[in-house]
Length: 146
Image 1 (cartoon, rainbow, N blue to C red):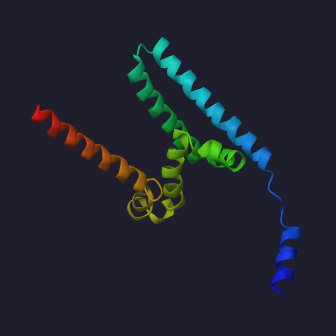
Image 2: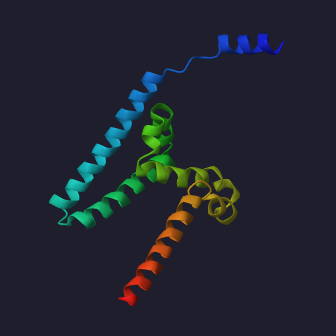
Image 3: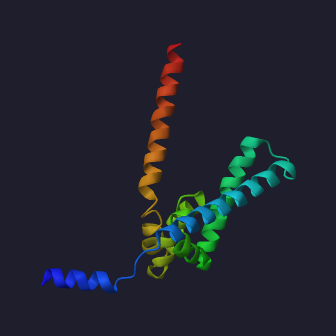
């Protein structure tokens, strides 16, 4: 019985189009990267920022754009077609923070948005902040020894 059911499910299930998915992920990830490079060049050439400040401003701008498009529901549509091409860039990080917050906003700002804001991105932030504190501590200790 299980073999018949598995055969039936395999017959009626849509087959994934791997090549198409790979191409969409590559193209969308590339487009997001090109947009980021254009924003970076604008900050350097017209904003008067040096390369380090422009890189920070570009990251902030891309996070804002990703969060804004998630709030409008556009980023989810992009993600359905692009898959990993929309998740891997920094805009995907913004999406991972805003999506749970948008989902639970009906429960209120504290128990809904606040409690679920970092549901997906929280562990990443905790690891990143914790690692940077440890690295800074060891750097401080080793510079005192000299």
